[in-house]
Length: 496
Image 1 (cartoon, one colour):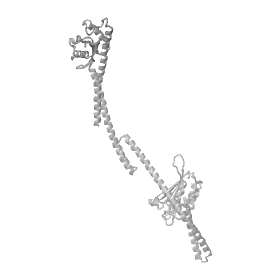
Image 2 (cartoon, helix red, strand yellow):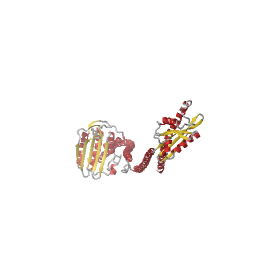
Image 3 (tube, one colour):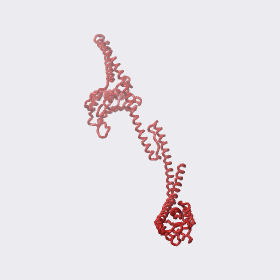
Image 4 (cartoon, one colour):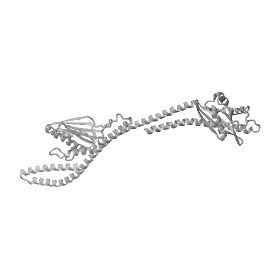
């Protein structure tokens, strides 16, 4: 800041100096041109009047007539030069003659009558004498109480000699000083404005630096938590705009990270299912062939046995073999890629059919079933068999969760809308009043072979999850210990 202030002060001083010098130089230049015009006019007339002696010579001027003629010549040249007085100087007489003054104040007569202010006559005589003797232009500047007086003189040649000189004088009154004072004011005003601009710039830079430091600290905190706030309430509007943009960026990054984590979780789930599918398919094929042989041998044994206890044991063995065969079939279904046979179907009818099948099981477990439909048209292109398989698993799980103390199973069917302009699918919700599950169990309900039942395989909800996804839908489980479980299945209008 100190360097800038010094630079501004130097600029002010240089401008003021240039203003004063410019005024004097301009006036000197014009006065010099006027003096040369006076010399040129005399020399031209001297050449044309040399033979008839109409123009008096400065070498031998006749004081009576020469002064009058030269005064007329001076007036002819100087009457158009504002504020300029002038005349001639004779080297032979060492005197001033033939002068002209607009106000009759710069003539030898006026100076003789006591109007010589500050030695002007002596200064004019000295300047004119110097120009005649040195044969070069001469000038002098006088500082008087009334202002500045500029004097210039140029030599006049008469053949090969210098007969004298022509001189001119001009006063620059205090009016020019007033102009300089105005220039002082302007320059000082400009300098003050420049200093104020520098101060404002430094203040703005300081405020911006404070805001930038806050933004840097906020960005560092965002690295650990995208929801961390950045306090810039007292900062300039530009800083607040930047902070708002950073907040929007943080929210967008958070959404993208959550979306990527969800996709990554789904990919890991798909990879686990694919690996398990290949393993299960191999095991199921290896188990099925020996199981068929065992079934055949047990059947033969049962037909040939005569002891009732042996026949009864063969029947029990066949039932267990059938159960194992069913389990193998489920494992093979889990391992195979899901292939849908889509056809228009009313989900309301499918749900009612499945509820009717399990109504007796619900009655035996002390469970009431309440169905509520919130839409008239619930038709969608779905695979009816697969949807029945999904609903069967969810209904059985709900009834088993309430088998100890009974309860109520609420089934709700409604249109599912993602956009206000139209229907986008159907939502089927199963809510029971059973014992519920803790969050740790809920997070693994779709994992293959994960179960809390003593006789379960852990494939029911895993298969449901794959079938719902194959339809392009979504299945979600919400549960709380002691308050039941809610399973929400959403199937879009355009099934995948």
